[in-house]
Image 1 (cartoon, one colour):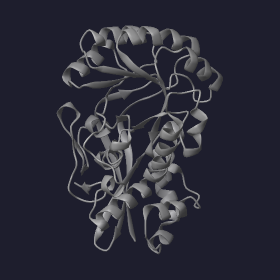
Image 2 (cartoon, rainbow, N blue to C red):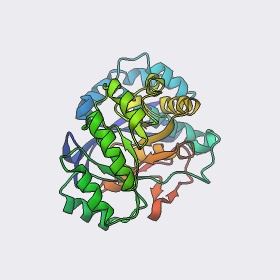
Image 3 (cartoon, rainbow, N blue to C red):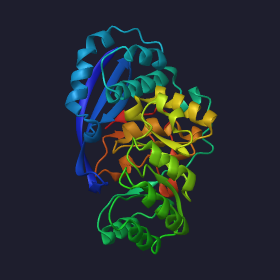
Image 4 (spheres, helix red, strand yellow):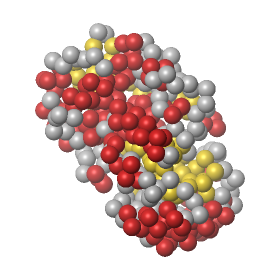
Length: 336
């Protein structure tokens, strides 16, 4: 296989803020794997919370580039097993794994959802994220982009006020994500108020390692609670039983589509709701997520919708969340 790395700086339409950080630009690495005249594309973004930079990923992948070029590619799953033996981060594995899946589907001339025997006749609608800002700015974003489901980022000293004010301007479904900013008692108290305000669930309200706190919240919350930072890799899924109602899988954090498929399978067997979320990715990463849609209860794949300018074509999300899948095999990605 031939391998090529492309670094991009993605500019956002608006400053994106969560409880622990704000940014206007997102560094992204695209991995291109080519074989027999076909090229597959994968993506992973930098992430300060997990101490991942594009430079780190480039260095890790370059260290195994010669081996990758000589690797006999048969399936993404076999390649992923090989990658697990290498000293690279899950973010780097993700970019390679996504590219391998896209390449595999293109070689077979089949989209991934068909290879996995899933039906895109029914799928969940993606949420659209409203990042932390002044309440007025959050209302402005909401009104400028009418959508059926919003994910509202919280973690301020005015969280309930934010939801009350936004609710006055929209009848859409609300989901809230506190990104580890709340305490257990605060979460339980907020859950009853938020339920009255039409919130569907709360994502990762406490710090990732506060398992005792999550035990309390799980028992006492008026709303379901979804794990994000507390559920990173496949072995974390079963740990969430009795602490969470569902899990939010991030491809970059778990290592790509291969482990994500296993996490979905384990979660369903365990009775946990399944969700896949995105970072601020381009259409490269979002098109990979979209292949999983028939297997999910919820999805947050609005990353490319938040960008001023995309770098690729693939899966498109239209009004009211309708997803248009390309005819091209794999994840259906072409770079602009």
